[in-house]
Each structure stands twice: as C-alpha cells, then as structure tokens.
Image (tube, rainbow, N blue to C red; front, side, top):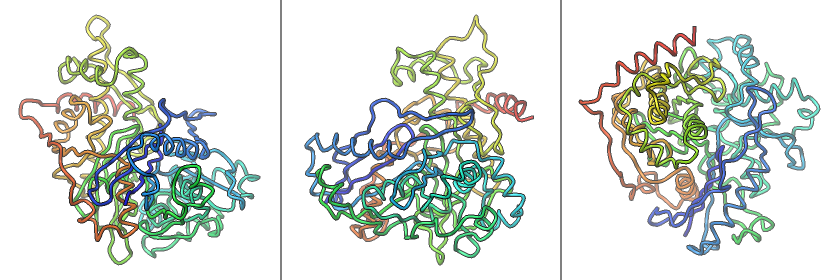
Length: 492
C-alpha cells in the first residue's frame, strides 16, 4: 500500500508517495518550479488564491505520476499538511468567495487587539491560550467588517488544508487542532469559544464538522480521481497545519520533545501536557495532532516570519548568479560575526514574538570598504539564527527548555553556516533527519487509516542523519548581544 502526502506551502505545493510498510519515500516533487506569488494589494497584506493551491496540487500529482516510479492505483490514503492561520471562505456551492488571507497578513492585528481587550486578557489567555492577534478568527472579522457582502454569502470557513480536502472529497471538515490555530477553541471547556463567537458575532454554523486529525475526512470523488490516475474512494485520513505536521514528521509527539524548521518562516515547536500560555502572546499554544481532552498534548509555537524569505531576498539582490549551495559556500568564507555586519530579518509582516510589531528588515553597520557579499550572506544567516535565540529565550521563560532540537535536513538547515550559528547561539544540539512535510503528511495518513498500530510503529525506520553540537571554540554570545542591542533600539 502507498500513501500520498501533500504539503500546501506558501512557495509551492510539495507531494510525496511513501511505501506504507517501509516508511520510505518512493518519489517526491513540487509545483511550480518557481516560487508561487503572494498578492499584496495593500502594505502589510498577504493573499493567495485557494484555487491556485488546488491547481498546483493537481499539477504536482500529474508530474509525480509521470515518473512511473509507482502505480497511482496503489495509493490507499491521503494526508494533507498546510500553511497555518489562513482563512478560506466558500458559499453553499463550495465556491471560493475571495483569495485566502494567509498567515503573514497583518491587516487584522488591530481587530485582534480590540477583541483581546474586550473579551478580557485573563479570560482570553486562560481559555484560548493566545490573543486573537492576526489569526484566522480576526481575519474573518475583517471580512465581516470590510466585505459584508462576501461575509453574508459565507457558508463555511476553513483553514487551507480543509479546503484542499474539500476539493478532493466534496466534504467539509475540520479538527480541534485547526480550530485552535484559528483561535476559535476554548481549552477550558473543550468546545468552540463562546466569547470569540459572541464578540465577533459569528454563527457557529460557519464551522465545518469537527473530526479527529487522524480520521476519515471524506473520500476522493470519481470526478477528481479519474484525471489524476487515482482510485475513486481513497480516504483523506489526516490534515494538520504545517508546524504540527513538521513535528509529527520528526516523531515529536510527547512532552519535552521539540522540533524546528527554517523555511519561508522559522519555527521552534515544543510539545507540552500543560495548558499554559505566554502572558504577552509572543509564543503561541495550539492543540497538537494527538491532542485529546483526556490526554492533553499541546504545541508551543515560536514563529519568525522573516527567515528563509530573508535569505532569498539577499540572494536576489546580491547573489543572483549563485545557487543557494554556492551562496552558503561564500558565507562560510566570512568569520563568525560577519565583521560587525548585522541583519534584522523582520520584513515579512508583523512578528508575534515582537508583540505584533512591524519593524521591517534592516542591514546595520555596513562598511563600504570592508564588507563584501560573503559577509552579507553570512550576516543574513546569523541574523536569522539570532532571531531563533531571541524567541527560544521567550520559550525558556515559559518553561520550555529543550535539551535537543530535531529538524529536517532541508531549507536553511542545509547551510552549515546557519546550522552552526543556530546551535552555538542557542546552546542546544540539533539532530538532523531526512524527510519533509509531505512525507510527514503521508505517514500521518497511514496513522489515520490504521495502517500503523501507533506512532512508534509509524516511525520504527526513522534514522538520524547527524547531530550538530555547540562548539567550545565558537563564541557567538558577544555577536548576539550586539545584535540584540540593535533589535531593542528598533523596538523602542
């Protein structure tokens, strides 16, 4: 039996086909080849077309089928991972009413702040575990306030993965994990939040049927299956946000286990059994994929919007002729600290860990007679690593102190410069593993379909590639302290 995993990312849709018995990835691809467009009709706005995600998903499946590495008819279950916090709204005919307001969009911050005060900070934090911020509920409130003609047509609200599952199956479902990331869930009562729905004036009928993450969310219709070479009736058995899914892909399920990723955005995600929160909502707590009312498993998430996107921007302006691998080699020619050049990578929307401030990206203390491209490349990667340290210190203040962090050998972790800066400035070893979000989604589908007895069975063949330990010969602390002083000057 084969498992199909789909990861709806910001830059592309990635898919993998995994052999259920061996948990080995047979084939993998992404679509499109170039990075997908983020629409920004106003400063601070970020939108993408859900129908574009669906088109890319179909193109990716067709592209992978063409490799002839597997028989598409052998696929027995589908899992979906997706970019978190996006809003998708459809009418009764399942027609998309507007482009999705995605995770890095900042327009609803003020709406979320007003809701936080009106609901009451203590009530919101103790039950929602977060401020409404610019999460999905606040984005829906923005539509209600600014596009009432569309809100009035809305039949169901969804997260991006719910939408893709709907396109496969014609059924609309969601989960507690998804609702919690949208700030719709009351963890004290384990139900939809009355304060949120009452304050915003939302009808609970807008919420799809709530099902466990690992369960059947519908079966693939004949009309969809036939042109994609799939069997009709394949169940979609797993849906999760990209960061809970990344944790799953790294076998991070239990309290004290921690995962990280450094793609377009950067994340540290630690599992706890404590229903807790950051008083300033700088890090956020959501229901993990294995959350249950009788057995709490929550994910504490640090998100840095400006991560890989900062590295990509630096490449586009100073390294257009280089591959990322060559850029990493150039960065390695510079010494730690980049000869006093510092980068603030916060140019991709408001940063939650900075209390929803929008300070932009900055390059500091450029010496035109000293600094070259290699220092610039290194400073960008170090600035991203320093951002992780800043956020990890917040997590430590909230009781999350990892002894080791697991990460996929992908994206920024492909760079030795970034990885070594990360472990040396945080003081935490990193274990690197093969796989990505689409492979994780495939394994999640296997868990949801009952192919595996439990998570231990699902990851019995998981192998660590290497461990990167902090070096006694590299002291990043003085460089971090200078970077931190610059950051504080921007925060005021």
